[in-house]
Image 1 (cartoon, rainbow, N blue to C red):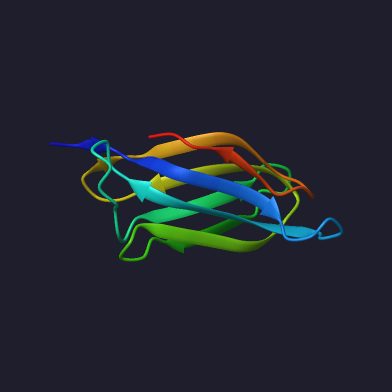
Image 2: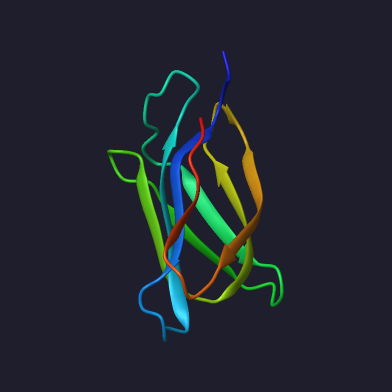
Length: 102
């Protein structure tokens, strides 16, 4: 049985008001809420095409730091699960949650 990956929390933020970089962090879980360790998470800067990756830890957490401000596409994959894609993630100079969903 295949489960759809979801992100329990996704936060895109800049560390300080004058910062030129930010980070994207979150938790990968399945439709039942169980966390998924070992999931591959990648973010692609839409403007530059530069891609950065991370792997979720034993608690399903990931963090991709030091990203330039801009618009990003996030993808998460792990064997046995449907690929998850989230478009329109904007890193700006304000710390704010982008979305929380399952």
